[in-house]
Image 1: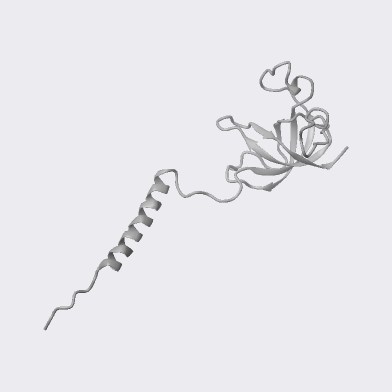
Image 2 (image 1 turned 180 degrees about the vertical axis):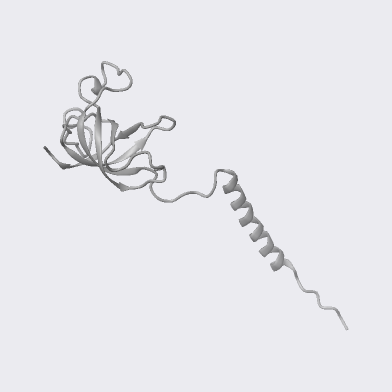
Length: 151
């Protein structure tokens, strides 16, 4: 009787596939863990309490030398908790925020914008995503915002 030879190729391919998957998982864990999905930044509903001084000097050519770019903001609500949220601000807190494109209306300052910002004054409420500056505690920047209540 002749022996029948059974190919082990499919078994080895399956083992190779499982090993590759395990290697990918191991690599992800070595690189800081699996990739997180969803937003990194948090979004708030806030009210401008008052203008504030910038924490660093600015060039004379900067729009922030002529228009307010920083304010104390009362956090009315946290609308979205991003992956970088770890309890650093809560509803009811007042935090300093820098506005990347000033707090003045942007139509004349940045005519190249597709969407212009209306400007913010003390008492105005807005909704925005907060960008955190890495390594600097309580350093938040707003690029774009939606005005929700003009005082």
